[in-house]
Image 1 (cartoon, rainbow, N blue to C red):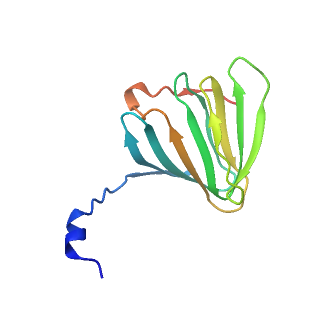
Image 2: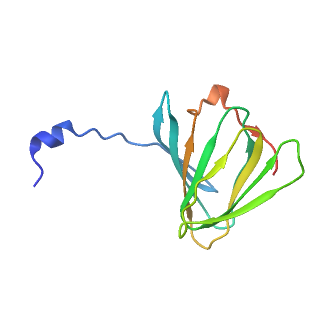
Length: 132
């Protein structure tokens, strides 16, 4: 049984969820010095992304499902496609200057854990649309 004093010290922060036809997106942890952690779900066959950043560094980990992470330097025609899955966890780093996207290639919702070195700021998003 949990003591009542522990319950009084428990801090619970509700997370807002953004839903659309692609799936859901949650900004889970935000810090001023260490960026933010987010989680997204993506429906089968759906692609998210097709954008690049000038300063933002991101790390992607598929924790459930299967996907292809595609990227290309914005001044190159060479495309890189990398298969990932929740069965074999891999951290894929997306550095500034690379347009990127992730496509759910499985038959169930994919769950993606994301880290970014910067907190998302709607007024200064550092997100520029560009097909991979």
